[in-house]
Image 1 (cartoon, rainbow, N blue to C red):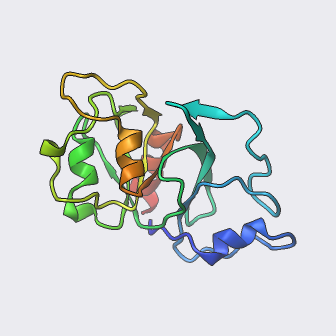
Image 2: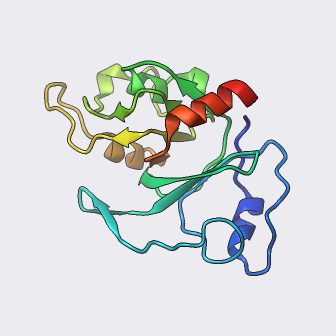
Amino acid sequence: GHLWLSQSVRNWTKPGTNIPKFRRTVGIQTKAFQHGPGPQEALSTPQYYRGFLMAKCFLVLEDGTIMEGTGFGSMENTSGEVVFSTGMTGYQEGLTDPSFRGQILTMSYPLIGNYGVNLKDNESEKVQVSGFVVRELCDSPTDVYGGKDLDSFLRENGIPGIAGVDTRSLIIKIRNAG
């Protein structure tokens, strides 16, 4: 499905607003909702990853489905078409592949980031996706490839990610409903 996060989703944070009618909309919302419909809980128990405070993050699909996870990378809101990759490796190549420009890439393999990121494996000169969805983010990549961790790489490139999402159910939903 197509992903969109704009004023409609941000309006949820204003008291008295209703859930907007989605027109093929989806988005990653990285700030906890304070008022209105949808998830009501704020960040209750702080979570840290490599010394950085991690925010609750929400993936909002066009059919109204809201998937909660933990944000990593850039703490920005984003929008784009949700797509998926079934590869067990190649997350860095997917992130920098021009064919994924402006899309939110979901990885089907459950553990992502275990071999880190290095500049020689980029498919282009910059990250092309507008967001990244994973089941589990590896917080201690191997030193074999001499790269950096995925969280730092996405943060440096201004790309938000969400971890802790049931990517299997998300991919089935995308595959079946578009």
